[in-house]
Length: 153
Image (cartoon, rainbow, N blue to C red; front, side, top):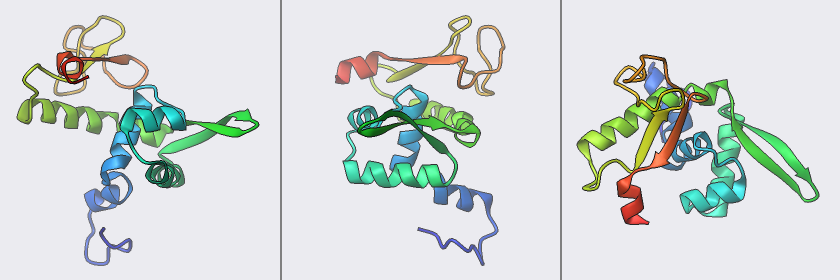
């Protein structure tokens, strides 16, 4: 991991990677964006150990990427919701997914399909709907499993 003080690295990418550059962190953000907001749902979706998930959730909450809200008091349980800071990661995650689909394609096609709720179009390279031109992001998109995900499961 890079040093936290960045004495020799004045770099926004390095600072961002300190927060989201660890593999599980981005996958947790992706899963929350896809609607998995409770600890058990995140663990099942990701196949991650409880200890690693707990550690990453605490880190993402501490950095202001996630917010923890109680939904039950006995026992105390929480929903994990994306903050404005977390929602702002959508374009980066979508670009990474498009990059992976292009350069590391699955034989059966993309495992996840992103669709504009309004018209069913998908994101173009500028995060606009390829069908109607509307800006896309959390709240106006939905995801569904593609053929590759169905073939693997």
